[in-house]
Image (cartoon, rainbow, N blue to C red; front, side, top):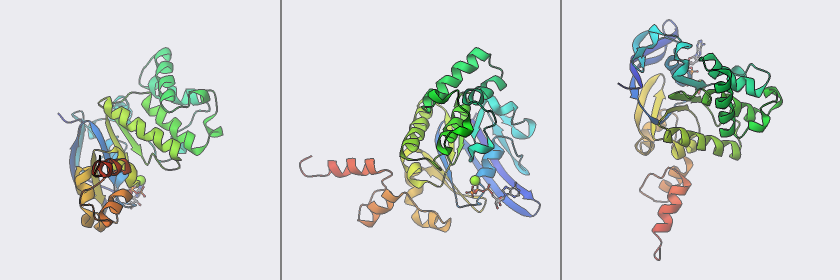
Length: 270
Ligand SMILES: Nc1ncnc2c1ncn2[C@@H]1O[C@H](COP(=O)(O)OP(=O)(O)OP(=O)(O)O)[C@@H](O)[C@H]1O
Ligand SMILES: [Mg+2]
């Protein structure tokens, strides 16, 4: 049984204006990036995965359960969704209370919830801010609080909507490490992003949406090799991939680190 099964799903907010059209894919563990131009249906798709919306036609199964027969609240133990804007997610006036809310809500004892919340705050390096009001923190820190409040529930599926927005180098590095650590723990990480460099560095699989349809689905290197197809969806590969191609390298390089390793190993006295 797949962790997530999306079977021929179509969805419209307004009758006659389809947002998703006949989308089919399945996911298990690992890291998956969902990319696509603005309005292509990415956020709608993850809201469907979380049962916040229900398909008009087709079905979505989460661990074998049809989302039409469950609720977002019932799925909370399995699917964690970090919102695009932390201000839409955060509602407590103390960081620790915010991060403990999820675990308490899924039935953990206060001690257990506190332990999990502290561990999640350590992961995002914000444990020293646990007594503060989230609204006294920077936007970047608030985003990390919203990430911690999902990590504290230890769900099998973690979905991030645009996690690197408003993050500086430190915050981005932190988020990249969180994604890699979650994958190492066997979780399924789904991330919506416009940041192709982040996709190249951290994600094993890429799903491309274009005008509500699934345009490409495959290993990251394979998807970023299809520059012409990507261009039809107004997308382009990471900068390093484009640069290496422009200066004549045949391979698809997904990160600067990968290219530097390749380059150094090709030097005559290496
Ligand atoms: N609540 C809503 N009611 C009506 N239409 C909506 C609603 N939410 C989104 N839409 C429309 O559905 C389409 C897909 O929106 P969605 O937010 O899923 O796209 P997206 O790929 O996440 O875009 P972005 O990259 O800008 O975040 C857009 O045309 C959008 O205007
Ligand atoms: Mg969106």
